[in-house]
Image (tube, rainbow, N blue to C red):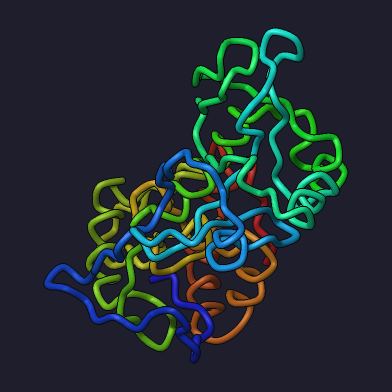
Length: 277
């Protein structure tokens, strides 16, 4: 069920179904990088400075990892922790111009190593560095975030990218080839009961009036938490797109049949739905 206007472009759906209809892409998510000094060669060949931030080409995952930079040596007792940099700000540009970029280390972890100039340059673990004020002006969304919070944002973003996505061969309506089976089994598991208004269709010949809605609008995402069992009336009023699709053709005829047979039942029940004929 749940047929709408055909979709004729299927960008991103290039892989065929496996025996169960899906394949899982290789994930390239967040990965901790080595906390080492940055050389000018790294700046020229391995790092990218963009409006979004600083990125390092990751040779392991063959992807880019967003990083931050911070001073390698610092007077921890006198001045506290060094600032961390997320952009090519005035301070970073000055060090690039002077050719002294090795004074900085790169990182994308909560804890980093700083050589304490107040204690014989001993490497010490520090965390929660404050953001450079110049970088804060270039990246308002990071303002007020310390380095540990910034790393957590990176992890969340990369985890989202790394979530295995299912690619499926779809029909001309944009549904996966096994959608009829999935829809039937989901409706059966909900006893052909609408999760919105509560109506249950007991007549086997009227079960087409109970449909399955994709909550996020992605008709290739058949995960249970993205599905909702709805009667055709509730399905038709989900949003403007659904109202349009159910206002013509076979969908409109099916909706009219439901209204004529079950309209009074819904109006006289506990639901607050008011059908317009």
